[in-house]
Amino acid sequence: MKIDPHVHCRDGKQSYKETIAHAFMVADAQGVEKFFDMPNTDPPITTEEHIKERLKLVPEKRLEDYYIWIGVTSDENQIREAVKCVENYKNVVGLKMFAGKSVGDLTVLEKNDQRKVYKTLAGLGYKGVIAVHCEKESLIKGELWDPKNPVTHSKSRPKRAEIKSVKDQIELAKKTGFAGTLHICHITCPESVESVEQARKEISVTCGVTPHHVLWDQKMQKRPDGLLYKMNPPLRDKKTVAGLLECVKSGKIDWIETDYAPHPVGEKMFEPFMSGYPSLYLYKDFVENFLPSIGVSKELIEKMTYGNIARVFENKLK
Ligand SMILES: [Zn+2]
Image 1 (tube, helix red, strand yellow):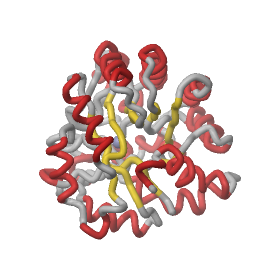
Image 2 (cartoon, protein in one colour):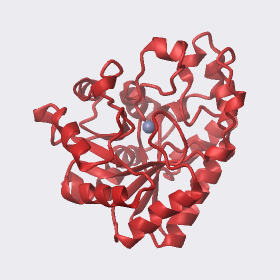
Image 3 (tube, helix red, strand yellow):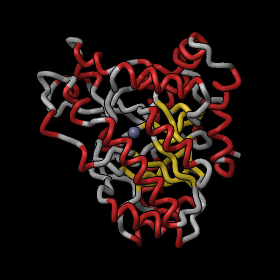
Image 4 (tube, protein in one colour):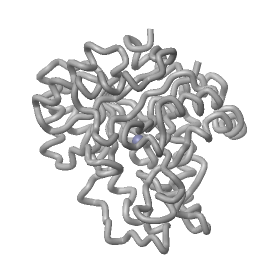
């Protein structure tokens, strides 16, 4: 059994990008049985009504394999409703917070608002998972991005934006008495992994890595098709990638999540130069060939593709 806890199926208005039904076809071909879909759709998924509508789009035979993260905002009533959905719907696997702006408008950018989220969750006694996209908005330098020189994307979203955001989330979870599990999505910097390692002593915290952040560095953006390699967080420099690989090898990363985010080639190579890579297509080769080739043990691969995920989402997956 293999699970991908981070895919963007879109569907609805964005069916031209991807649909739940087609994402299952890709997953099947890649040896992935179940996946967790993300809520930054158009419109975003933040209410019980949205969840009901979403579940109607799932092929009936795959309802046992489909899970969705519900988005959180800084609105207390919305957070309460989202928590109820996690409690009442087996398919709603946890909460997702975008602490930095990526694709879509579902964001909680200010640290004070993020604090409100953790505080509200602590008050509600929420014991589930909150998955966070960590890139601190105030450290992102959008003005550096130049589509004629795609590698500027990596420069506009520097490592420190992730490292600082990860520190913020850990600090807020600790200080507010948040009692659930904090999951750091698609971690890219060894420094962020070290923060997670330190925090494990005090709080329940996990992190995931994508195939693309381990396989490639930012030079990929210097190719003629470099715009295809624009994603958030961005590809990093060679040294950072080597460091991240060591973190994978030493078992410091809880799981592999593809952050599968397909867009039409035209939307990536031309305006609006969308961010996102369809990394579920990399999955099988990554876990069956690449990871063993660099000496990652079978046991560790099993944990990163299933075991650790099954442990954290025990009540959802049984
Ligand atoms: Zn994502």
